[in-house]
Image (cartoon, rainbow, N blue to C red):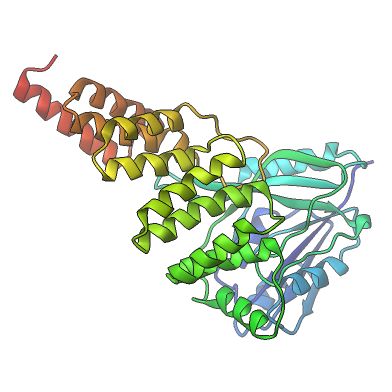
Length: 363
């Protein structure tokens, strides 16, 4: 017997994207639950075209509470969540329907890839896996006022399904940071995960000194996922560079190696460190290390696939060109073009090398 699915969304003033989201999954779910946290536009009217299960929830600066309220209304075998600006493509819609037909009842959590940034050709440039479909009877609970999460537990399945986060406008500036600051003013102690995300919000707000202090507090504390620690090393280095402390930035990047094998994102940051200092041989070493890395599979961390191919190839082109090794530089540019044949940087470089070839009678 095929399992049943509930879909839960929390929304506020989403008239510009909600129909796109719900249309992309129409016919998949036995019930759709929309929790409105204070819309003043036509969000609820649009939701009413797809479901009668629309509930009001008074906003209290806590995303986890709103998510838990939405999940409390779910009655089907499994509960899935989406944001209003998420989209399920035709290909992933088919995969989701196939999953529904084949999902074994002993599975507690289905992880799906979350693609959140894209290049000009629409290919993902930033993704990570999220706990997307959860067994309703397990009564999983969301935690975290901001960047809320359910800790996966039980039998976990990593699926091939991707959800695309397609924003059409920016979030309210400073919203998340403001929530964190209110919690801290109330004397609430942030757990390690929330401390990491608070540091990121400080960084996004260009409060680099405070962000660096918070990242360091996170890294020196106990707990926190391995992937968050690796990402925090890179973010901390970013803050240190802005603060003019280049040695601390460099050491922060190296610190990431104490947690796990080198990530291409870190290797490219090290490559940039040496490229900026015109130490091209060392830059080449780190970019080649990044280029030879495999994109992590079934990871809970952030992944930027361009750092595993396109970016190091393009940077190796620059390094070799600076060293006067034009054939190698052109070869690396062609490798970059294999990843992104329509990319302006690749095409500019291609024209540049063609001009050099003509001028030098280079074969």
